[in-house]
Length: 327
Ligand SMILES: Nc1ncnc2c1ncn2[C@@H]1O[C@H](COP(=O)(O)OP(=O)(O)OP(=O)(O)O)[C@@H](O)[C@H]1O
Image (cartoon, rainbow, N blue to C red; front, side, top):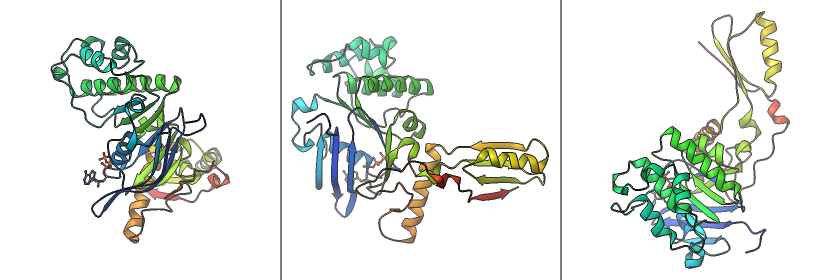
């Protein structure tokens, strides 16, 4: 593969199980060195997609190239360039953490140092402990360690931090940031939107086997989805809410109107989680209305196939179209 070729190239990918289209026509490029977050609710088709890319599942149709190779024909040399952290893994319970990692390191031509990897995943104190005696979160760290021991060019992380305590998640994020700095390409699935926002360069949202949104993390959902919300309690005791691209102007006018500090004033910038929930909600509503594909028109960033990127914020952010009042 050439330098400019994406690390992952997917065109028209489909996977059916009987009548169910688990993956229903996905087009996607993941560029070299980027961290791409694949998001979507349970059963959306994320693991099916990722496992086809890893060579663990066959596809029904479509074209796939991972590091320039069709995963259906990937040999051992190709596999050695990948790091894979599956959703669940069965490790040798009788082996210690160190033994297991040293054992796997031998399969790779240029592995990382076993002790460095153990330290990077925060298991130094448990290096000599048998895997069967580790907690769920500690075992997950072993999975991650096994995924990176071979110094992979491309790492697949399928819900890597499930079961981690908050401190372990933050340590894991630092580890991923280190891999990013080293130029590793990462494809991540996660249900933690803060994790996707922190680690991802771009994200795609899969619903019902289709990619319904694709874009840079801070542009996903289109400009309208990012318009801030100003919330305050009026002098009449009711909570008011208004979306506006000019929150400072609105706050100034509220101050002028109320003649003082507005009670419970907040300016809220929608997070990736807010945008994601809106996308999924809009798609579910559209799906309920029509029996066609889910929410192809959920946002400006919508991309049922061919997946056009989210456009940069524009004047549309000046809209102040939503106003709500509650007690
Ligand atoms: N081996 C299989 N046989 C039949 N159906 C399957 C099989 N594997 C997955 N499916 C179905 O395909 C759909 C997509 O599943 P998939 O595991 O890819 O979802 P996911 O997005 O990874 O979900 P989660 O977030 O729960 O991991 C689901 O409806 C699932 O039931």
